[in-house]
Image (tube, rainbow, N blue to C red; front, side, top):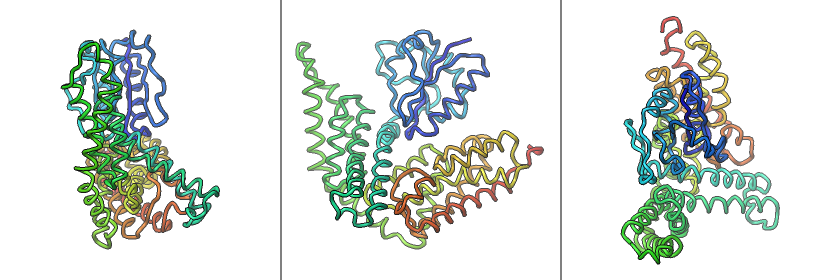
Length: 454
């Protein structure tokens, strides 16, 4: 029996993190190995691996789409993959981990290479930033919505009231969204020295009106500026202590500030304003087409790059005051697990007993906007399930856009719909979700084979 330690982490820290942990635990049990999985989810690190457990471990698995500190595992055999790889093939991943070579101490900060291609670069840095940004967006959006609920649409004209306090607090949380995104993208690239220029760059993106795109660029630039400073500026040993506390923060912050103010600010603001105007002007068929595209992206890989790209795009428009796209994206993201759950009820002969039981959990995951609830079904029968749920999500996205539904918060599923003013055209919004759910369920009931035929 081998001892294994693992860390799982996904951008939102809600579903994939824990699904990967469960998959690894089940695989280890079946293979006769002992495993401890640390989950770095939205509530922070849980089941934290101790120094003693690291020393006793035979190998290490990192299944993450965000930046995970690997320094404590130096000297141990290690593999690092996307969190979805652990969900899809936990046993195969475990075998690779047991065959891996130790990470040398002198290469402590070097990325561990694995045979299977790993998502690195901009995507991983963006997802790290997004994982830290989402709680600010959710908290800010809900507090603003509660302010409107208690004080009406002119709540900002009543300073000193409870409703206005909620509204103002929400606005402040929203104001921190872009600096947090930018700061933690830079952190993902350059570690702690990237935080200061990253946060400042994001704040300046807010100030000059460059919005989400500006913050994204600021985070990338700040991180790589710090990397270049560390690489090319060398001080005598007696002065090396000045690098982290003086040279790097001051120089990198000054450079990113000048770039944002004098180079990127106005062009990105113009692009951002143009995009916002185009989105706000979408009507009829054009709006429906965008809804179809976003719906398909949400369902195609259920928490993967396409899904996250659509979600990040929606939260970016939400930060700029747009709410229709956020509504379409959340509704479309709820459809895959809901459609599958309904299919397990109306077409029981198409699913085995285990899948029918999983369908019960899919109801709760779907109404909570956890698209990943559809992954086990899609993994078992991808060529029938994925097109079916994409069709349902496309219908929902299109209808939500056509109905002009809006959503003031970026997450929460059906549970936030009970808050007044969070959703406009609530009845039509529910109709859009139900329509997509029924389309997916009907398609699944037609295209899937009976269990005894498989």
